[in-house]
Amino acid sequence: MVFSSVHFLFIFLPVVLTIHFILGKRFRNLWLLLASLFFYAYGEKYYTIIMIVSISANYFLGVWIERNRGRLSQRTLVIIATLINLGLLGFFKYANFMVANVNAILEFFGACTIPNPRIHLPIGISFFTFQALSYVIDVYRKEVKAQEKLTDIALYITLFPQLIAGPIVRYHDVATQLTRRTISREKFALGIKRFIIGLGKKMLIANTLAITADRVFTLPANDLTTTLAWAGSICYSLQLYFDFSGYSDMAIGLGHMLGFTFLENFNYPYISLSIREHWKRWHISLTSWMRDYLYISLGGSRCSTARTYFNLMIIFVATAFWHGAEWHFLFWGLWNGLFMALERAGWIKPEKLRFKPLQLMYALLVILIGHAMFRADTAAIAFNHLAALFGFARGTGAGHHIFFYMQMETWIALVLGIIGCAPICPYLDELITTWINRQTGRISRAALAIYPSVKVLLLMGILGLSIIKLSASTYNPFIYFRF
Image: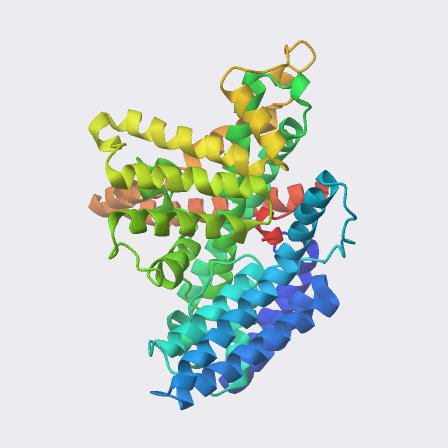
């Protein structure tokens, strides 16, 4: 079940919220747990058992680690937890990839191949596995106490707003909220606003640009032109950002409605002036997870220079394979890791450009090239697209003019997307609010009455257009569901 679906918006969410408010605090967690399990089972059915196994194993391991403080078995238990979590993730996410590559080698040498079982990838397994593993590691590090109530750990892992596409929520950030959280009108209203904005990002911008991006990235190499390659990369980069940040906005909004506060997952990453800055703004929950649980564990920057850069590349290889078991993801990860290392070493110094637009162009160029690798379904398609980006296109453009791929709706979404990549709207809102507060007399009273109403009408317009788009279109996937 996706947030931008009729079943979720008009059946599941109203029922969950209504019963959540009616129930007393004592039963709210149990209700949310049942609702979250149903939410997951609606799309995955029998694979819900995998998540229940993960919950049970991590709950008991957390409790046992807490009870074995100061003993050697404590370290053994955290190793077992790591093996179980990464083992589940590895089996379901990478078994097909490994068998396919082994078969390719066997075929090359003329040997018999291995039957490929075609194992199904459970939705959101990368997200809930990382949440569960971070909980056990935090218990081991004495950053949190083990949760004695199984239902509370189960709710932490399964809570439906962030279950299948993040953000990756740390246990210490919501531990108190699981037992004591406040639901207020202000927070609920903020949640509605955030949810509508996220829905608009997804339905009005991401889904519209996705049509052009999909058509361009499925073109044969002989039909691809340089213009189309750049149009496809730009549309896809905007689609990726508004799809995922839109989902994160909706998740954060839903959390507010239920009394939870989740940390931000995006901070306008496309206004970054370097790749290092970009990764501080993009998918913040994953970046911080990799830093705290992998990079630091490897020694971080406390090692020799060579080892520090090695650790950095390991982080991006892990980030790449977290996204998917495909070679083009690895190329994307190595590409980003390379520029992170070059900037850290001082071989590339964006700040030396002085003129900020040039710094922005540098960062965007690296990002766009990386996203071309990320989007391509195979390594061959990625290299063909990159060749077209740099002028080595095979297509003539005679039968594939850009205007065949960019309709008026696409151009509007493109403009809105570019505007939305920068904090222009919050800046204008702050500017108008400051002006209103400086006014006196009738002007002040009129502005204070009108401006909030205008913002409500804008939100209602976004919601209405999103619902119209939802009812009129069958194309409505979330990119990060496959991760």
